[in-house]
Amino acid sequence: MKTHGYGWANGKIILMGEHAVVYGEPAIALPFTGTKVEVHIKPAETTQLISTYYQGPLSNSPDSLHSIHVLITKLLTHFDYQAGLSFTITSTIPAERGMGSSAAVAVAVTRAVFHFFDVPITHDLLLHFVNQAEKIAHGNPSGIDAAATSGKNPLYFIKGAPFEDFPLNIDAYLVVADTGIKGQTRAAVASVAQLRQTAPDTTIPALQQLGKLAKRARQTIIHNQPAQLGACMSNAHFLLQQLSVSNSCLDNLVDTALQAGALGAKLTGGGRGGCLIVLAENRLVADGIEQQLRLQGAKQTWVQGLGAYEHV
Ligand code: PMV
Image 1 (cartoon, protein in one colour):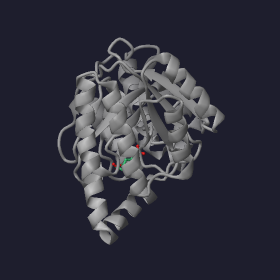
Image 2 (spheres, protein in one colour):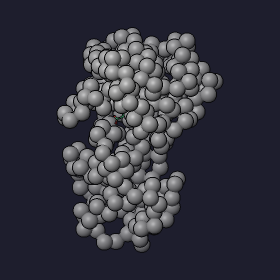
Image 3 (cartoon, rainbow, N blue to C red):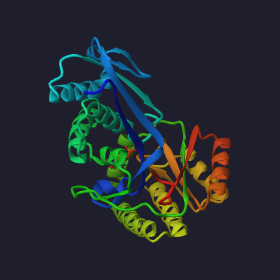
Image 4 (cartoon, rainbow, N blue to C red):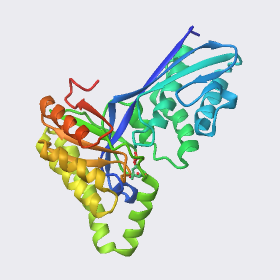
């Protein structure tokens, strides 16, 4: 056992395929290194949490931290540890923006506990603990948040099939912008389901086309074709608009990015708020886009290099 433990995790974004993935089409998620959670552990009299939302004994933590409470209890039982530990959690991942913040906290807590006990953790065991916490936080998670916040590569996934990772090697920059509005994943998923019932002739082909674009996007990443990836992203945004999951704020910021020279832009995740993602051919263009997005009201922006040497 050490005198301290440390764990970390990234945020995640969905690059392509949101909503269509619910209907069996492929999607791509990316670890998003622009945001991060870190957890530090040290021995204490009783087990306690120190975070932005709550500071105090684990046993009194609020409902919003219930999944972390259960996770820590399971981890300490796993190591048969009876004494207290203090967990300091710091995060730059905004909550409820589709960036996987709950999974990332669970990944960082689990890594920190194994580090404290000086025991290496396999990726499978990490996901086992994190997915238990995610079940409590989200009911029936796909597991993609846990996999993408703990890994380094893009993940290609189809519901019910194992995740496939592939190398990120595209000479371009991704700008991520937060509208500042909470995403409405649940409502958006429900309205796509309704559209699929009431207007199947347009909705089903749109969902299938989103799946095709996700497949094509994977090829463009493997073959380092930024312009083609940008086109896939903008096409996907147009289809997501048809599915009624965008809103005027996202549409305005997508237009702003395109006018500022983006190769492509789209909403990411559930939509109707949350974040958008923009592809830029180099850092200079990315910085210019970031500035324009902020002028148009984006609350926060991040830039991530996507080339093999940028992404660590
Ligand atoms: O915003 P997020 O990261 O929760 O992504 C939602 C993705 C959807 O495809 C809209 C829903 C889902 O369960 O896959």
